[in-house]
Image (cartoon, rainbow, N blue to C red; front, top):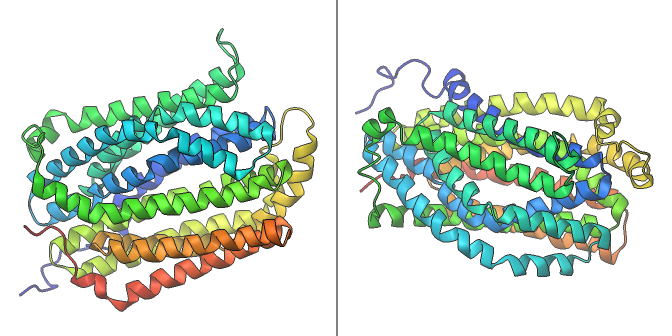
Length: 458
């Protein structure tokens, strides 16, 4: 019979959550800085390249999301195997995920014509559509880099070595920012490549980040502790477990990002002014949202670890710690959005006077101020959904999240295309749905069913 008396102090507490999650927050912060800097650089060329990079980049990422979600579930499985004392199986999960990634890359490239058809269906302004396709095509060739990074990052997150992921992300950021500055604007004797330069810089950053992860994974200490070389094989049981629990996460991620990308396309099809305003707002939304994913990974890892060890009470404590950390960060973002929206929008002002930006700036300022309403809802949703995923409640999480996202797509289409309402009205509808999302995930968590699930059994 387990007792709380023997629990090491601080298990599941805020200090443990910060120790595990802070490097992941920094890691995702670096990813945010990478994307954000790309958009700022491109905004100097004008609003259209900036908007094209956002839509093209989102679509490229969307093409990979099923496999990213699937292989990203290495975090929860590795954490549960670690908690159950089966360290050799942690590396086995990585091997299965890497095999999936290598098989997935050519499939993603083969599906490129589907994305081109999606662009045509979206009926975007011609100036944006042409640049968007170029950016998308280049990024898609880096799919294998992104997928393998996901496998290895998820492994280190699951076993609690999140500093490795942080250093990898910092490497990607530094390489990408430096390469983009040189390639976009044409420095150090390189001709200016504009939008193409931004895409090439992203691929260079991903490659260098993967090298950092791979060197650590194959390092002597890691090889010995997790029997990495012996795990370089196909394992049917572990593969089936990864497919069973990871597939719902992959389907959810793909369908959600397809819905989100469709929403962006609806806004962008409204015109170049609306496209610029929405792009600016969502670039700042990245600053709000993406670092929270680092906290979510911490919640997934600790909940998975303590459920694997048969301690749902500590898993619940870890969830509460994650919620405190996430809400504290989101509160700071809320204050910034409310008090400095015009200054935040001005960051994306082009070097030369631009009529599109002049019209988009006041629209973006109002939308950014309204975005303050949902930043805390994002924190709540990500923490509770992380707890559910760490526990293995992935099928319910997939159904709820996908249904809520796809309910929003026809609502935005109705507002923007059928009723021809201003973009502010559609933006308010999006905010209302995000508030609903957070409430639904909280109610599922509160039901307590997640405490009875476990994945690391034989």
